[in-house]
Length: 289
Ligand SMILES: [Zn+2]
Image (cartoon, rainbow, N blue to C red; front, side, top):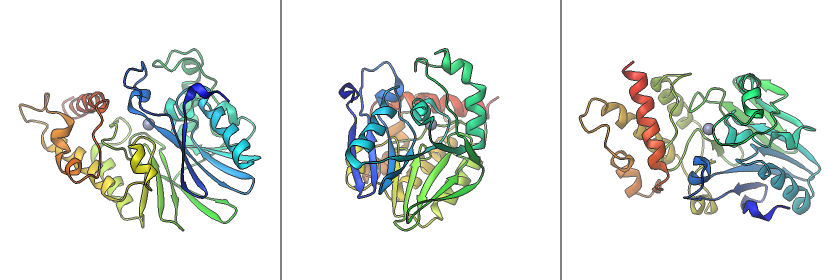
């Protein structure tokens, strides 16, 4: 196994693992500076793997780990959305069922040439293997006696899936929620629609929230609660309310996050200054064009 990938494995419950690639402040890739990871649920000799991480090789590392340490022989992959830091190593599961939203498959195929030529961002070239089972809305999936509800939320990217485990009231949010703040894209759904979707998520019976990008210690200690949803809602709402403020262009993310930072719902991380700048640009483009 490639030990240079420095992946840390966190056992959240006896059947639920988090694979974390760490935060690397000087890395040339933004996703590596922000830090992130992926999840796997396993039972007996079968596993449902959620996303394939951020660099070619990491997805293979996770599969080998599950085979070697947990004796997994049968895999199902879920691709939460088409962003490269979630699908880069899908080729590792070319022999398996890969479940995703209809739009995830369509977008991956539309971008196939660009991805495979290494012309998308600075991810380098990678083989595109899109979902081979697609749906819209919600899909119920069983891993032995563990029920998984794959749920579409119009937040962050079109066709984005979260995974809800009703028995343990766990919601694997992937990029629907993020600590300290989330990445805006209003090209497929308006800010109003995405806020309504986050409100819909709040109505669900959830005790534990697990995002891909967050603070490792929080995930190690069992994850976030619903206050993370509110912190993400408040961040967008307070920026929207502030759009015409003369200092909008210079206000920092912590200016909008003082309450959840103070009460410990979220933890600040400097790399997110870049995400805040992109979010500000997105809001100005969408509301002033
Ligand atoms: Zn994403």
